[in-house]
Length: 419
Image (tube, rainbow, N blue to C red; front, side):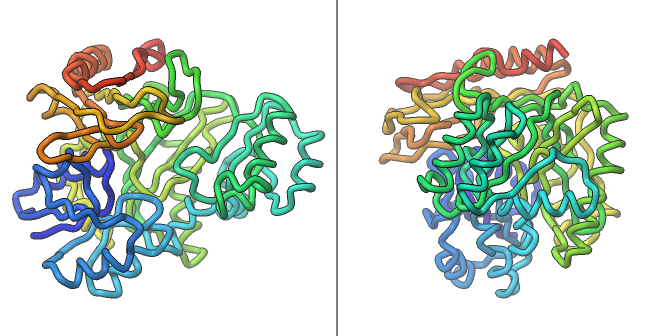
């Protein structure tokens, strides 16, 4: 069986390794893939948003199944395009991917179907947004409506900060078209939980919960990033909370999307805040999270390809989705300066042991040498019987990944340990 995997980051490297556990998988073509995936897949170099290039490749090579992992191609309609060619896909079509593609859509969906979320207002005019901020409760959260590489959310501690964020998005073009509409919402407090879930549009089977570490520096200081590390499971996400989320958030969301004529199949990510008034949705993603995938999939005991095909075929209810009772920790090694300016092109060395536990994100091959090409370069994951052991082992293994100007947070998982 030949699989086409769209994407080229650490998340895709984790998906690649899980897919290859199935003995029926012969070749995985990665589009574009990256230097760290080259030994395990056929990297094509075709961009994840190059839908014409993807379709052309799919027509020229034997592809039995496609996994579309990143948000951009999903929102652009990559699944629609491949499905029209007769290629079965894992991932939502464009009509369903709007749940991440437009925050205004997702907020209005939650309001219409009584799914718990933060109070909010949507603005398409700068003056109206600025006027609203004169009296809005502070702190407040300002979000670009569209996709913004995980950087389109500003938690403003002052009115001035909120107004600056809105102005930069709506008038300054900071996020292009994604920021022409903004959502201003209530600041929620409580532990954050990420829950990825498999769904075939009717049935939903959540994966093990996780805790992301978004800030660039220790003690949750510094700028927001795409994620500097993760642990799973999240200790705040108890069985009782999980049941409440299933009843009040997960199933209602799947049913709401179906009722809107936007049946969602694939991986639906729930970003949750466990407030004193119960769990509330901070955001939806229409795909596997990064770096949550790097701790969740190593704990999956069932076969990933079988589950993905069940989501496509509508047979998830009859398909086993089983996770280990163990704990996992992923530590990101990044380029100094990320998420702002950073240098590229530094050679990466890895011990054999580290290599076996490391997912490569921002790296490419120069000749036979793997060199840095992005902000988040690698994610090293360890699985152990206890969270403490998983954290210790992840850091030990991550020490086997070396390149000039590398840096990583030293406190991944500490908040979870205290919980």
